[in-house]
Length: 232
Image 1 (cartoon, one colour):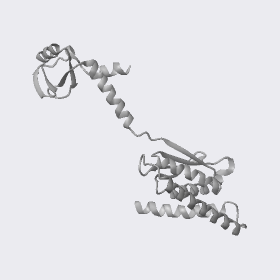
Image 2 (image 1 turned 135 degrees about the horizontal axis):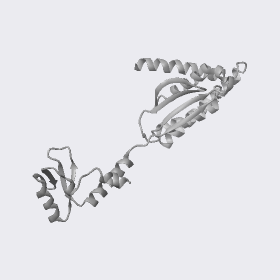
Image 3 (image 1 turned 120 degrees about the horizontal axis):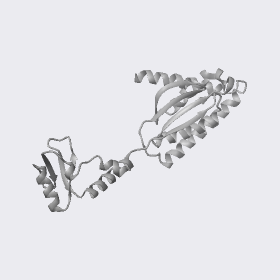
Image 4 (image 1 turned 45 degrees about the vertical axis):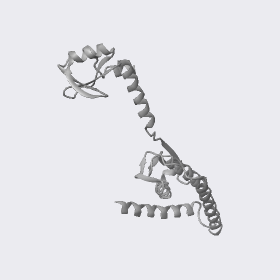
């Protein structure tokens, strides 16, 4: 089917009915009557293939038509292989996601963006949890703020039905992953932050569950909004 469609794109030999054509080759180009061009193709044992019908006069080549189609098909495959395939990876949160789960998903989102993929993060509100809509929005804004080094926000959080979405695109598509040394350093920093958080959680044991997460999220949300205003 693909070859049939490709064949329909070009006129060959007797299908070319214009008065004259421009023949291009390794030695340059020349304008000759179409009948003469057909005789030249016949003498060389090849075909007269029209490759640029909108030119004046139309541009043709003296080449084996089957070989020409093969080269065109091969070129299309090479171009397709060079195209960067961008995937959209999903990250799902609940409106009361705990810190450990948040950090786990943040790590994966960062890897997706560093690999050149987009990220669609969303908070799913089940049943009466829709009452925590503001908390879900703040969580997504914190998420975007924590990923500002590798991703850019394509739109502020928006509620669609029972889901609130946030879209992030990589700052550098297809960027190479960080070195293992950098990853180890980041892991050590993450462990230190987690230890400090746990110590803080002990001190603030009387505060409501997820209070610390929400407070941090609000701070990050304010920072992100200020950053957005500056960019605008």
